[in-house]
Every structure is written in structure tokens, then in C-alpha cells.
Length: 376
Image (cartoon, rainbow, N blue to C red; front, top):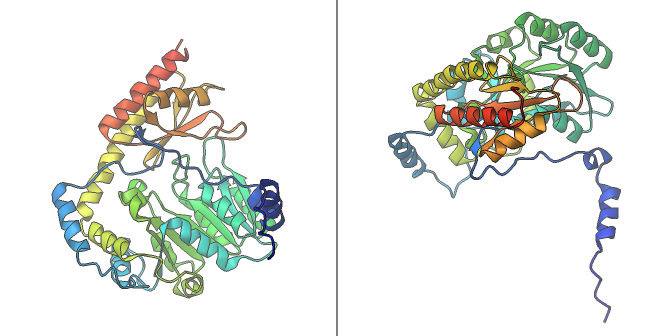
């Protein structure tokens, strides 16, 4: 009898990982989601509102009819038709659904991947643009925003001419600044783009500005939406609208049944209660203005105007980590965006919550500033 094979050592496992995993993946850090148990959760740009009990009961009655033993509709036809109407997608344009907007970003990127190609975006911007580009084996090129977080049109156009990007991603409004870029700048970028342009309207329900009607004018333009910010983050549903010929090609990459039956039924039901979702968004927009005003009045705080459901703010130089930790110690979780260099130096971000959550955050922020002597 042959001797049993010895267990692989830790060193051997690491050697094999380094041998076979792509170097650019080894250099990445996985997307980190902190445990928010026991905290007032204001770090992930979620809608803080739940549904009334009667709506929950109505929703559960819909789910009782779900045929869990069968595969879902692979094209999500009923839900897609509702979204086409609700989001006012031009009649001759198509939509594709994804497991969150992340999947749609990945599908688009995979469709155009080729060695030597680039993807371009402003900086800072949604972090998944960079990560998915690297996953796909392409180069990610960034163009810094101006000091006031506005888009630098000339720098964008110059970078596009130099790098010939396959995709240009622009979040509208921008994450993490909340800034809604000038429409004229975006039109200039769309018209100069050699490849496709994706306008990411994840926060449309708060910004109430859109490029959706412009899909008729530009066949290489896509509009990306998500239901996450509308109070449906748990469903993981993204929507990509654009030219049907492009979508036919991208659809070849989409895995079958990517939207499960519970997500299809739940989203269709939720969107039949659009008035409820609109009222929640209106409350968030109202409280965003109040929260921004209260933060701006605090010593040592610069709160930036936002068209999203979050507020980017800057603290005194070198104090971001301390302020973040002091707020966390008070039971409130926000996002630490501080980088040693660049526009996000000394910056933190807070999601607009309920009135009670916003009050808890303001109290924690005030206490942090007092403890650190920021107001003295």
C-alpha cells in the first residue's frame, strides 16, 4: 500500500497561490463590509425606512404563490416591463437586469475586455469601477476631480484622447461627494467618447436628474440604475438601459436565471407601491438639507452639498481617524474615506437616516469634536 499523502503545509499553499492567482488580484484588498450589529448604521447609503405592517402582509401573500421548485423567468419579463415604464426608458431602448448594479458593471466590462484596453472614470468615484476593471484584466485610468469635486471637462477629454478607453464610467451624482456634475460637461464627454459611456444614476431618486431621455441621441450611451437606494437594497437588483443591439451582445455573458423568483416578485410588488417609496425619498431629501445645515454649523466641519442620500464632510487636518473612532464608540457607524493624499484627505461620509438616527449622529459628532478639542 502506498503511504497516505501528507497534508499540504501553509508555505506550500501560499506558494501555489502565488503561482496561479493573477498578480493584480494578489495586490487587491477584498471589499470590506464591517459588522454593524448594535450600531446606528449610517455607513452604506441605505434607505432607513421599513414598510408598514399592512404592506408587509400584502407582500408575504404575494410570495406564498412563488413556485420555488421552478426556475424563475430568465428574462424577468413582467418586472422588466414595469421598470421600463417606471424609469421612462425610451420606447425603442432595452433594459437588462442584474444582481445589483455591480453585476451589470461586470458584464459590460467583460464584454469589451481585451489586453491593452483601458477603462476611465473620475477620481474619486464608485470603488467597484476600479475593482471590476482589474478583475477583467484591463487598465483603470482615473482623472482627478477639481478641489470642489466638480468634473474637470478638459482633463477628461484629454485623458480620453490619450488612453482611448473602452468604457467611461461617470456616477451621477458622484459617490462619494454627492456632487451632480454639469450636464454640458457630460454631453461633451459622451460625444467625444471612442467607446461606451455609462452614466451611473444609483442616486437618481434623490437627485431627480437623469440622462435617460438622451439614450435616443447616443447609441453608445448606457444609463445604470439600482433599486438599492429606493429601500430595496436587500433584493440586489440593478437596471441597465441602452441600445438593444449592445444589450444583445452583453446578454450573451449574463448567466441564466441571475434574478431569482423572490427578487422578481418582491421588486414588482414594491414598485406597485411607488407612492410609498417616493414619500420615503422625499423625507430623506428633506432631512438631508437639515442635517447638512446642522453639520455646517459645527466648528471644524466642512459639509459638502449633496444630491444623494449621504453627506461628505471634512474634519480638521489629521483628525479623521480619531473622529471616526469617537463616533463609533458612541454607537454610530459611518464611513471613513480618509486618504493620505488627494481630495478625500480628512474626509468622512454619513448616510442620511431617520430623524432619530440623524440626531444620534449629530450628538456623537459634537461629542467627538469636544473630546478632541476641535472647537477650542
